[in-house]
Image 1: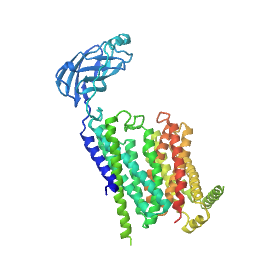
Image 2: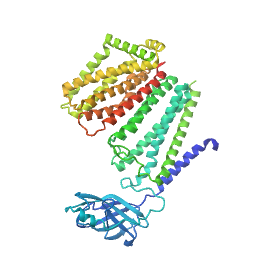
Image 3: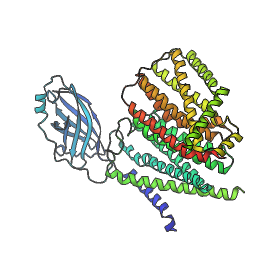
Length: 351
Length: 219
């Protein structure tokens, strides 16, 4: 029993692990919001910082903060006040000029304290300058060195300012898509097998894999739309990746219409298998090549880095890869049930 | 060698049929003329972007209409006769080649008519004609194969549309993009990768059609 069905148990265990760990592990402390977002060089400013998951200590000397304009130039905060565990105020005296000839330079905000570790908000404050004097700016911005940064302790997922908690959707949206692709590949494999052997049983397998693949595709599209609602502002923003995905689902829905237009099971199987292989060969350019060549909001397209190069850290990998395996095994299980049902139906109902 | 000879015969047969009946070419000519005319009178002004999109859409619908009949024109008995004589790969290659020629004529004809009534915004002719050529090949291969599948069913026209249109979108989008670039509507030099995409898709379609058609045809 266990010897035969261990993979089902493994799939369920992996998914339970992905759901619990993926949903319960907290995010790293991060900077949620700062104000103001712009300032003039040569003036003192007070930056109000809203932290996410932070626990800023009441003792201001335990906190250090910098504004960093490039890899070597930074400015330390003059004084720091804690208003709550989630909010601090930073006073900076901006020098009269920046270490560059540019009119405006974006400065990243870096906050470091022992308990929450280091927190970074890229391009937090935009600094305008009237007097262009790079030499003076160079001196004024080279007074501090950022060093002895603390590490965040414990298990955490990365904090990304635009993603926040939705980064957990990686374990559902992205993993479901991986699993869908594996299911479609399995379906093509069985279609080829059917065409070579003419055995109807392989066609039942191919059809079942396509069914579950489409189900996973719809789930992936839905989770993607929910994610897009949060990060891009709308469930459906006519992004090329979304459109291509919807078309990919149309291609597979057409597969079922095609099958249903034939009465004869043998014909249904042969034409369905041919179309399945043909469609898969066009599915690859449709979802994986064309969106990459066009402008898109989705990671991995139009020059955007693919999700994973820097956002997917080792903690996330510990959940992400098991989630892919878990969804794939669950998909295989579902397809297995569907295929067995089709085989039984053919055996007992066709006579 | 035998394969090439068979393709030659089949192509000659298709062309002779076409010459005797003049069904496809006159039908397409009228189709293109009337569509272009309808587009012309319903649109007030056709500028570059609209021109590009309308052009490829007219080409798309005309191609579907032209190719749908490629496996339906001939009776079942005659198909059986071919099947007993010929290599299936020769059949699909000849049909694909003939349809590609037909689509090239059709597209150039549409281009001529459309330029005549709505002006010609194409600035860089090279990529535009390359897009027409590679796109016609892709359209012909896809629709020929789909019409091979659809011809076995009763609801041919519906199947042709629901099976063919989603599949044609990668090719169509790349063509629209190349068209827009040749008109100077979008900047950038992605033309190489677009050509590579189209050539890649065409080659994959060719390979898959050749591999799968032998399983399709005997019925």
